[in-house]
Image (cartoon, rainbow, N blue to C red; front, side, top):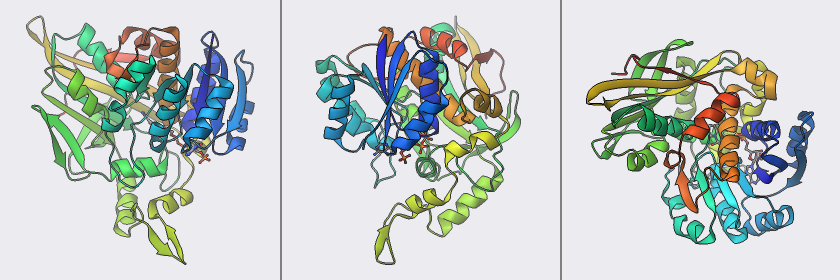
Length: 399
Ligand code: NDP
């Protein structure tokens, strides 16, 4: 019986709250706290018939003393940062000050620099060890489940892994000319950055969207996908010993890319402040205000996602191939929790990660990435909580 503080009240936080309430044996009480309290109240009101006690609060997660005061009054066993990556460090500071476990779904990036890497959060390792608390980083789907899949492949299907391709396909259609499936600011910062992949011990940078492949995804079909830099490659390069090459691909439609190119060309994706009618505005933040709120896409989105990992390597001296993936249906997710599949596939793993820290199965003082823990209880929980996985031992490989 544990208490969790969920910070944020967007599309993903909505799913986390619903899923904690479905797992009331572990989560006896949750507090949903965010910048706009009415959004927390709306989530609370949408959850029916759970034994989990729910309360709500307002908090500015950029403000450490405010966070500490909230944690001291609610006394959670774990804090889940389901707000934005900008708040990772302030929330980690508040967890250290109150000796409370921590979890997030995306690694820290400074607001004024579109650069995401683990160094800032890994620097907290010793302090978390000394405080006797666990920080579990990047526990959504990718990052998150993608690394659980790697740990599972390593443990059960390979003696050595040579290559890993993480493939993220979204065949959902929301009917808008242009929208992003999660926070538009974070999403556009990610896809307009240089790509990169890992080969023979080092990362190789590529211009944005310059490497394209077509893959025939199970239950979705042929999709164009593009190589991106993605944060889990950084930790996997440390933790999957002997891996020679790792890449991350995400699908985008030509329509999405055309809109993005135009927005980029006119300067709307920039994070450098510009003067407008006497005020400093950041074009990307202004664009976010114009675009549909990802949480509002739920009732309109049809189609499926398929996210998984393809491995090659050796088992018992023989060449081996393995593909493990989840297929998720936008409309089913909406029916169950009122969010589309991107929020769903992120929120379910965040709840599972938090529950494993709380039950002690994934509790270890320090700062950890998901692949550093035993994947078995997580893989079981994925099947139980709505993200069943499938596997194939003879998949098509990506060239
Ligand atoms: P949204 O933009 O829908 O929600 C973000 C929420 O955080 C909003 O409720 C917002 O409040 C709140 N917030 C922002 N700043 C603060 C602050 N300073 N203090 C308190 N609350 C704050 O985002 P999503 O739900 O789509 O995404 C949530 C997180 O999940 C992001 O970090 C995203 O990167 C991550 N993610 C991870 C994925 C994975 O697979 N690992 C995939 C998809 C997303 P307000 O409503 O007032 O603006």
